[in-house]
Each structure stands twice: as structure tokens, then as C-alpha cells.
Image 1 (cartoon, rainbow, N blue to C red):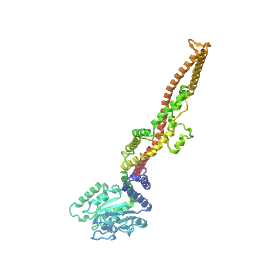
Image 2 (image 1 turned 120 degrees about the vertical axis):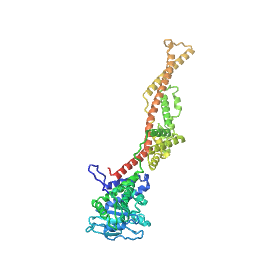
Image 3 (image 1 turned 180 degrees about the vertical axis):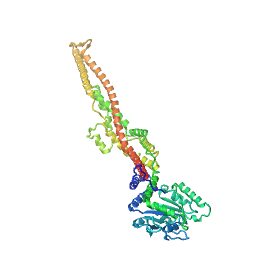
Image 4 (image 1 turned 135 degrees about the horizontal axis):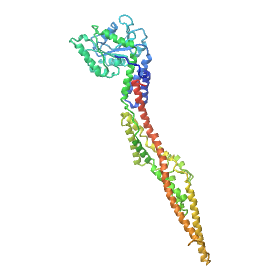
Length: 551
């Protein structure tokens, strides 16, 4: 058995209590995503670390554990130097734990915490000196037929600082010892001794060496470390000096308590770490693009952009079109007001679109079609599955839940996002210029028409009046035709410019709507998913810290 190292030149390690705090934080943060049995075991470890560390003192609890008939009680009495623990040929013999205490340090709080009622004080002087601070506990058999005996042994083993596994030549390969105790304690080799008792019963030449080597191999195969098996015989006194010396070295080092608790933390952290991935995944760009496209359709963005384009062209025609036909534009419905978007002025009823939204809670955008809703659900589920693909199942389910909010919540958020985007821009400077020019041209055409009408009336009255000419063309005719042709041409140019402006406005509004949808996606889908991933990463890091002690 080796003590935990504090080697020079290594990075400072976290204190034991800090490691316990990290483990406790993991349980509070991610207990629902981790294996319930591992969580329960880890909570017990955190509580045990706090309780044992609070007791303090310089005592070291060494537990003698083993199977029925291994001679634990005989070995206990031999180490104590007197018959303290009951020995009988009937099995099981030890029904409750017995503690032998060396030294004068107060031991009441520690023994009460261990739950050991039978106590014997040895003292520090005399034949068995050098063990000052030792609390040696004789446990019930770990394979006892009596359930309460096994429960008692397991309870104290959870709280002991050092394990002395006592076996014998007949039961040293017993599956219960190796599978139920040594394998789970693979991190506790620093606080473990292995004893082969009753070696005096082995009669074959070289039999003890062979059994000892086989036992050492089995313990190593259990992952419990490489140990020098101590051969003892309580009856003959064989190996007692070596065992007492090894126990004395552990007690004298005064670090077994910390080593045991560190091993517990490491084992608990490793068990919990089975429930987290080696690394935390990130949100994929391709999946994010699919989600954005689905939300865009669900929000009715194509409908809004069509309305923005149509509204821009309608307003441009109303301001720059041919004065004799521009009134037709006023007869058509306002595409944005029909959706309760854009202009918020009250209508003839005195009710503004914002008043309607306040009552209904949304605009008049068409509700998402079943196909659009299914597309959003598919995109959110795909995002959750892509992110959680390499995570353990509970974490993957948490990611999927985070990526799948209520559909009504997302729909309302998308609607409000669209409503919050300004869909109209300031009137372009060329609109009023063309509007004035169109009025001038219309006036010119009217003047020309009026002049020609006057000339026709005078001619009917047989009054001869000569109209001025511009070359071969009379001025009144030039005014009429020129005003009409120029007005139509400018109106046509205005329509072309309006289409270009409508496409430009459509693109601009599209970018702003994309940003608004991106905000909804972040708020309701990606941010909750990211929160789960952040918890996973924090859990992974804190488990590493709790297990290894690295800051």
C-alpha cells in the first residue's frame, strides 16, 4: 500500500473539500441527466467526506474484513494482544463490529459516527506500542448468511480509512470477495492491505508461495492494484509482526483518511462520468440553416415580402404615375394594412392595426400551414438529434426537449418579430420630383386640349383665329400630344424605377426579418439548447476536477 503522492514540481491540487464541492455542484446541476444509482452513491460520498473531515483528529480507522471462517477475529485478538472479539467454531460468529483503540486521543465522536458500540481501549505503551491513533475494527463476515451482518459490515466499510482484506487458503478466490468488494475499490489500492491468514494449514511444499502468488494475481486482475500479500497465522503468530508494522506505517503517516476520501471522490466522479460525453458538441451550421429556413416560412416571410414589394410599387405609382390614371391605385387594397402591418393609422372606423393586434395578440398574417408547422417540427427535431447524437441518452433527450418548444409559443414569437420590423421606408426623393413634373405635364396637356377646343368652337362660329405653330405643328396640338406622351413615358420610367426600388426594399426588409427570426430562434430554440450544452460542459469539467484534483 502506498500513500497518496504530493510530489514537488506538480501543479497544486484542489483541496479535498473543494473536490467534494465540485462533485456536489455536479449533482445539483445535472443530477437529472446522470445515472440515478451513481447520483445516489455520489451524494453519499459527498456527505461522508463532509462528516469525516469535520471530525478531524489524528485517528486512522482500519477495518478487518473477510469471509466466514477466514479467522478475522482471531487475527484481531492477536493484534490487540487479548481476547476482545468472540471466537467460536459456529458460523457466523461476529454479529456486530468491535473496535480496539490505541492512544489517549478522544475517540467518542469518531466511533459514534462509525456506529461501533463495542469498544476496547488498548493504550499506546507496552508490547503493542507504535500504533498510537489506530482504531482497529473487527467486522462481521461480508458473506454471512445473516443479512444484518452483511449490512453492518458494508456500512462500516463505507466509513473506514483503511481496508485489511483477510482471506484464507480455501476462500481466497471467492467470487463475492473479488466481484463485490475488490473490483469496485479499484481506486483504493493506496488504503488497502491483503492478508492470507491460516497459512499454517497449508501442508504442501511451496503451497503458501503458490497461493500467495495466485491471490496477488487475482487482486491485480480485479484492478485493485499490486499488493504484497501478507501471510499470517493467528494461531502460530506467523506474519503478525509484519502486519503490525504495515498497519503502524499507515497510522504513522496520518494521511490514510484523506487518501480514502480522495479515492471515494475519484470513484464517484468516474462512475458519474460514464453519463457524460468525452467532449461537448456544438451547434451545426447546416442544421441551423435548415431551422432558419423553416422558421422563415412558418413566420410568413414570403407573404410579407410580397406585400412589401407590392406596397412599394403601389405607393410609387400613386405618387409618380400618370395623373389621369393614378387614382386607380387608390382603389386597390393596401397589401400591408390588409396584414395589419406597415401603416398604423386608424381607418374609417377609427381602429388602427395596433388596436387589433392588442386584442388578438397577433397580426393578420396567415397561420402556418400544417406543412409549415411540420417543417418547423422536423427542423427543430433534426437540430436536437444532430447536437445530441454523440451525447449519452439522458443528455440527448434534454437537448431534444430544449430544441422543441411549444409550437404556439414559437408562432406568436415569430408573429411579434415580423410586426416589430419597419416595413416602409421614407419616401424616395425622386417621387415628389416626378409627381410635380407629372402635374406640370398634365397641366400642359389640359391647356393644349383647352386651346384646341377653343379653336374648334371659334371655327364652328366661323371666326377665323390662327394658332401659333412650332414648325408644321400647331402649339395647342404640341402641348396636348407632348404633355400626354411625356406623362406616359415618365409614368413608364417611374414604374421601372418602382420595380427596382421594390426589389431593393424587399431585400432590405428580408435581411431585417432574417435578423428578427434569428433572434426568435436564439431565444426559443438555440439558447435553451446551448444552456444544456453548457451544463454538460460544466459537468464534464467539474467531474474531472473532482476526480483528479486538478484545478
